[in-house]
Length: 340
Image (cartoon, rainbow, N blue to C red; front, side, top):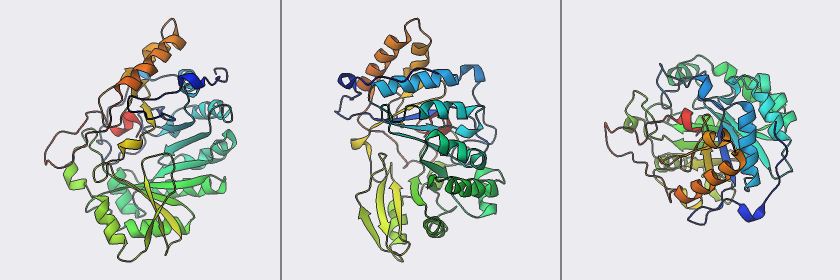
């Protein structure tokens, strides 16, 4: 793996709208062992492995971002923990904690988490985000097309046992899990976990009508406030969520609302796919090829130029729309490709 990076404060990443970029979401694979209906079709075509960056290249890439002022890296997918030898990358990145990098974390579906929780904690990971949309086994099977809820719950329990802080991410789906969201929140808070609800995003063809899935979180919040007291919180995780404290459960609830409340004005993130394509915006088509830079004769110089280019083309905001039935997805690429 590459040497520890040296911070150069005069070349920190700042986009054209004066937003400092300090957060990298780095995808290590587009593959997943689930097939969630809002994320991908059952017969998903995954990337040839030869197109995916090696672990050494991912480590080199992360080092380049840290040199430019990125302090938080989230490993994403697909499902990161299905990648072979992925713990080698976590251990390598963990060495950078305290050397420019302040936080290393991941988003996972938790099916493999029981096996890796201890190793993640030893590598320096302090918290994980777990995607979980339901606690009902039959509904989980319906949503993910896999009977794996028990593995997910075992993974969450193992993470807690290993000392990892767990935050649950649930996509709010109209007519699917909206009736269960209060129970999911109450269960999570009872376990000591935070919860963030997310509006469905129109990325990729999923063989279902997006508008039928879309549940505005304003409506969810209004429903919750019939029984609970939600108080706005000034807590920030460095991401797009707005947070509320719930008096009755004693826990914190986050809301990510790309449609009802645009959150782009404070965006501090970049996303890099497993093939090394940098997307300055989850909802945009702008991209920069970092793989070509890494594999050039002057990778450090070319990577620096590519990151400078990303700062120029990063848009002010996304253009997600969820108001037209039968419309093509806002972007053809799936969430599992971009890394969320």
